[in-house]
Image (cartoon, rainbow, N blue to C red; front, top):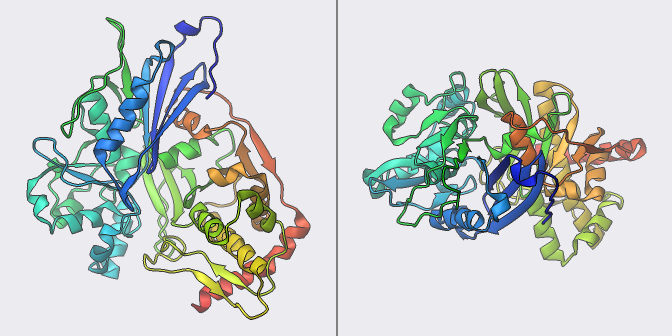
Length: 472
């Protein structure tokens, strides 16, 4: 944690950024365009893809309770992960856990949707038809007895906003990611809701990401309220905010319309554009952020989670993993990194991964390096598809992988392009504020330039990786 104090410190406007992901919530205090303190609360999944909403809200409250007198905010900005869902009854009691994007609840419902229906709903909403899609999870829940008790369909975003303000609203980006919003209007699609049998009154009001609400904490789910200890007469405003994906792109607004690769547990590549781009063969998403502003991209289920699996199975430290990554690629062995099913490029929830072209001459080193390069080659497929959609632009890199100079250089060599990595930690926090117009702070980047000789040598391996996918 970094704490800075200076002249007129107490008189500076203070922003509290609350960033809720699928495994933790982070609270960052920003003064004078600088992140001065940052705290994290982790929370467990009750099952894969499930979070206890009470535990999530308690984590937020714990961070609020931990603020010092000098950290009391004038504004609170909320950023959340997309594709979440939970059902609540008329008494504001939770009927379900919070389902995250990775929960397979919608898998069976997806199988009941025809190819034509999938394409039509995609073209209407800009959201790919995959088990992550909230509309599919809702179809599954509508078959259960709890549906008759449901009076509110929440996501993490509007759950937290209701807890902080008593207002039941959601921003356009997080709403768009549900698969229930019209990609042109940015509002709930009436015809789609009628077709699915979802009453609109069960959904929150959609507002702009810079909508400002009054801080007025409310209890939900039977929990007590943890209020900020504000002084008498002081007012705190809550800004609705945007999604985590949009915030990541906001961290690169100082570049010229960049493509942004986010590589954490999974990976995605995104670009901000001024109109929706819909290509059914690619199934790229187009999320409505604001009038004439869309977040277009391709998401994958696999990224750092596969590298973590590799380290566990082969008992590697991260330094050892990096050492293997700079060695020569295998002569034969190929690894398909689809250990968690796959969204783009396969769009197969039940896809599996594993080694191919393994023989008695294959070494332990070959097995390890093929996993690393399998992950990176899969990222390159999505990068190239994004270039086909939006053209060539500067490429930003964020997420846990960007902390490794070695892996970042490997990716730059494979893509054959320079990569820009923010020099500051948690740049996406300022990115959210930049999108909202709350700061014009500049973010500086470290530039990784591809080694042309190594880039050339990697092309053959990448082509063999593509050929192996095509043969499956």
